Image (cartoon, rainbow, N blue to C red):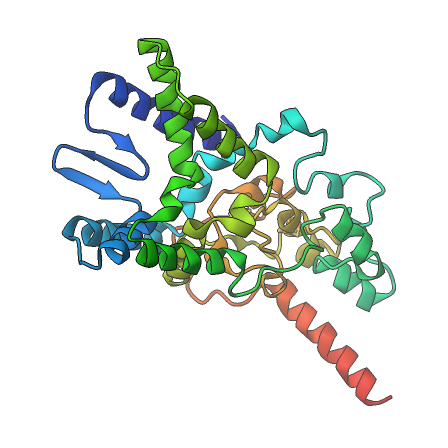
Length: 335
Ligand code: SF4
Ligand code: SF4
């Protein structure tokens, strides 16, 4: 079974399990607060918001935060790719738009970002191999080419929204963001549909909740990359994560092993990471361990080992890129 399919089936199974728990009145809850009887875990953002709102240290929230922190250190942001229902819901976008999935357009024949054999112009070729399209960069960025898109900064709009959601919880005495969180809205939609068919409950929520979810995730398009404060919180903790980091076999890679431009791994990454040239993309702490780069690599050069190999150094491509930049600087200095 394809990785992409598994990444859809797992969140759907979680939604289904929550729906079954809801029908049977067992204590599963949802991803915002999941548990059985007295044993329950809160979403880390909800836990922080609750404590700020109540201005007290809530034991259940503290335990939830500690467990979430350990899980993120061990698995990074894997929750985003493998469990969160939001990327699955966002696939509804395909119904409203004929635009190809992110990265797909850039791989079309004739596109400036398509793989190309290195030319005699070593400098330009090295830049292209590093995922930058040189003079075609603006055109590529307009087309949504992942390699040419703005690299995510250390702190971005998600972190601002994270700060705003925590501040609003403290000011209003309630974790306000939880009301509009698309994860909670996804589960609420399932529960409302169950209530409709089981008890004939027709309320405004039946329209308002899914409508808000569609606006946030389907119409706004960039929820995960630009807005989600939970992903921002996880990326901060994931700086301590060292596991399942993409590793490249330089001999098998088209760029370092065969002298050809490629960059498909960068184009496949929805988190704007450039596995071949990490210094050009978003930070590793954004990695969701989704394996899209592994699947995109035409030579199977990428793997996701549990821990980095001993003595592993910076990717060869990164060193080549640095050398090219140094050569450019020296040439400029010499006039
Ligand atoms: S680097 Fe690879 S595994 Fe990590 S988010 Fe990007 S595509 Fe997924
Ligand atoms: S690791 Fe694979 S996808 Fe990435 S540049 Fe090398 S050959 Fe291309």
